[in-house]
Length: 251
Picture 1: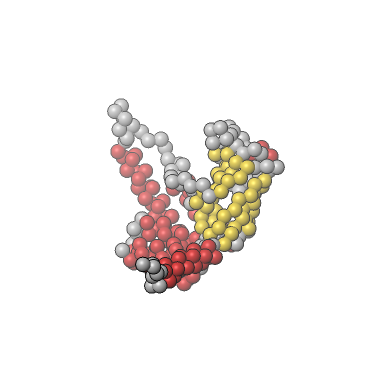
Picture 2: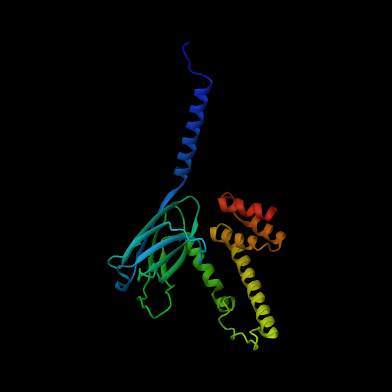
C-alpha cells in the first residue's frame, strides 16, 4: 500500500509554523535599539559597567549588557518597545565586585543616551550616584520628578532620625519607635501627593505611568488611582505597563 500525505494535516502545520514566524518577526520589529555611551574619569579605567533593569535596587539581578571601561569611556546597547527604567552599576575592583558608581534612568526605543560621571573613583568614599544624563526625552521627565521629590528624600530615607534607643534586653524604646513610624508615614503621604501632582501635570509621560504603577502596587485609594489613570494619554494606556496598571486597579 502506498502511503499518501494527509493534505489536511500538512497545510495546517505549515499555517501554524508560518503564524509563529510572523508573530516572532512582528515582535522583533516592534523592538527598537537604544545605545548608552558613557564618559568617566581615568580612575575608572579597567573597571566594568553593568546594565540591569529597574530603578534603584534590584533583588532579582539580571544583566542586560556589560562593557569594560577603556580610555574613560564605555558603550552599552539594548532594545525595547516601550520606555523602560534601567540602572548602570560601575565596578572598579573586579575581584570583590564593589559598586563604585551607580545611576538609574529611563530610556526609550531609538534613544542615543550619554551618561557623564565627573567625580573620580575613590575606594574610601561611598559610591557615586551623580551623573549628567542626556539624549532621552523620557529621562528629562524623570529628572524633573527627582528634582520635585528631592527635598523630602532625607525624610524618606530616615537620614535625620536619631539612633533607636534600646533597653538592656535589646528592645526598642516604644515611644521613640512610634514617633519615627508616624514621621515615616507622613513622609510617605507627602511622597504620594507629589507623585499625584506629577502625574496630573505630565499625562503623556511614561514616568507618570511608572509612578502610578508604584501606587497601584501599594493598593492605595482605588477611586483616586482610577482618576489618575483616566488622565493618562491613550498611548500610555496601550503599553504593557499601562495594561498591567489597568488590571491592578480593576481588581
